[in-house]
Length: 125
Image (cartoon, rainbow, N blue to C red):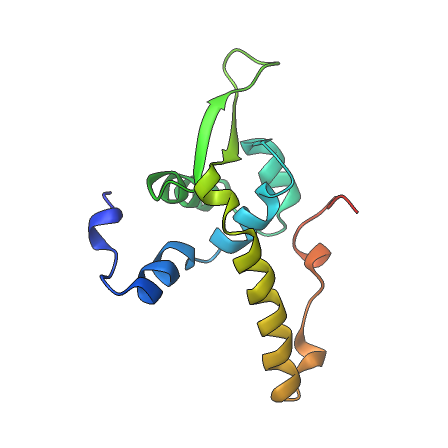
C-alpha cells in the first residue's frame, strides 16, 4: 500500500492527506476514548463496514497514528490504540469540530449538523 510515499510535500496538504478518508477522523475520535478491539469499533461506529474499518485502521497504522497490540483477554484478538502521534491529533480534531460548527453557522446550515452520538455510540461523558 505504501501510503506514506504518496503524501503531499506541503505540510497542510500532508496533514489533510493523513486525516482524510471516509472514517479516519471518526476512528481517531473514537480511539481517543482508549484502546478498542476491532469488533468494538465496528459496533460503536454506525454505518462502517468491516472491510472499510480494517482498511482505514491499516492506513492509520501506516501513518503512525494507531498501533495494534494483542488483546489481553483473547489470545487471537487484537486491539487498536492511538500512538503518541495519534494522541497529538486531539486538539486538531477539537478545532475541526469547532470550525465545522462555525462553517455551518456562517452558511445557515446548522440544521444539517449531527451530534457525535449519531455516529459514535456509547461515548463516555
